[in-house]
Length: 326
Figure 1 (cartoon, rainbow, N blue to C red):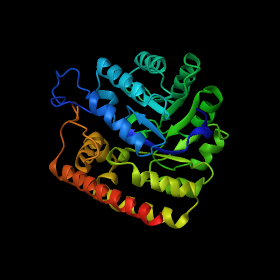
Figure 2 (cartoon, rainbow, N blue to C red):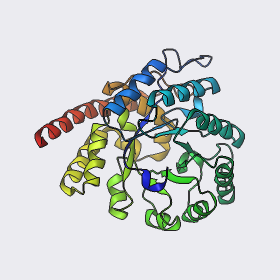
Figure 3 (cartoon, rainbow, N blue to C red):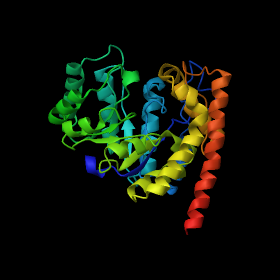
Figure 4 (tube, rainbow, N blue to C red):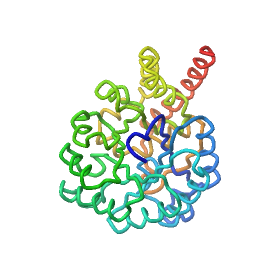
C-alpha cells in the first residue's frame, strides 16, 4: 500500500473481550465470535479499510497468545475484502519484530507501528528503528502510529523527512493533530499519507485538501455511517454537507469535551472511554477492559455513555439524510 492507496473511512476496532477479561490471571480473553461478527458488519456497512491493535485495541495489554488469536481471526475473516492494518507496537524492538513477522505471515496488508514503549526515543533512535524495520520487512507497508503522548516523542518535521528517505516501506501515518502538516507532507515529498481522525479531518482538509483522502475513526465501532458520510462528502467536495456532518459529529462527541481538552486526563482513560461509549451505542459488544485499565470514575463513564447515546441518534440522522437524498 502506497500513500495514494489510502482513501475513504478506516474503522478502528477494539479487541472484543470475554466476560472476566478484567481479571489479571485471565487467559483466552478475546471474544473471537464477536470479532468475526463485528468485522463482517463493518465491511457490510461500507468501511474502506480497518485498523486494529492500537490503543483502543488494547495492544499493550494482550498476551502473546491473545494477540495471535485475534490477528489470525481478523485476517481470516476480512479475507482481503478491504485493507487491514494490524498493530504491532511492543515494549521493545525484538517483540515488535515478532509481531510484525506474524502479521506479515498471516497476510496483513499493512502494519501500524509505534515506537518501543519504555525509554523515550531521540530522533536518531526513532529514525533508526523505522529504518531497520523497513530493511527487515521490505514487503510489509508500515503505518507509523504518531501518538506523541503515548510514545513521548514529538514526531518533528525533520523526523518525517529522514524516515521518508531511509525507510521506504513507511507509507502512512495515523495522525491526531494537524500541527506542521503542510511542512511534514513537503518533507516526505508526498510519499507518506497522513491520515487524520474523523474529529479533525476538516482541519486537515483546510491545510492539505489534495492529500486529505481518508480518515480513521474509533467511532466506527459504534456504527461507521456518520464518519463514512463525512469523508465521502469531503471526497465529493461538497462543502455544505461536509460542514453539516462535521457539526453533527462535534455534537455527538461534545460530552467528552472536558476530557478531550485535558490531554493527560484523556490519556489516563482512553481505552475506558472508547469501550464504554461503544458498549452504550449498541453496535458491538466490546466487553470489559483488560488490566490495569479497568478503573473508570463514574463521571467520565457517564459522559462516555452519553456520547454513545448521541452517536446512536446520529446514525439515525445520517440514515434519514441518505434516504432524503435518494
